[in-house]
Image (cartoon, rainbow, N blue to C red; front, side, top):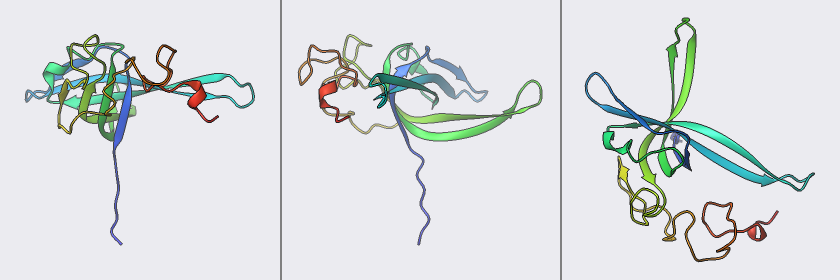
Length: 164
């Protein structure tokens, strides 16, 4: 039997800070930013909604013009792979860092959020077509739950649709 492995990450979240682009000595652009992803659940004992936010550091290679669009608070789709690297800090202690090396980054939202069409595509290291297919960006109109607060990223899902 052949051995297989998969290293694939897909994130949809909000930027925690403006992206920064630096250049390697050979001139390759390296853009770094942090993405916050939040999950919500209803506590079975207290019947209250709880939240947990996870921060992921993202590295994007050879896309120097993208940093101008990746600003704090914007919602993005990131697709890539996990990579762990190590280095020695100033005290000589070995430090490990795990980050997402992005293959594709798509700015989500409509024209009001970054000046792009509803597909939300800004730049990609690899092009594979639009994400989703609903035609509605976050906070879009129409569909179930329109006009109500939507905790599910603009998908039109309300608390009544969740089975727990």
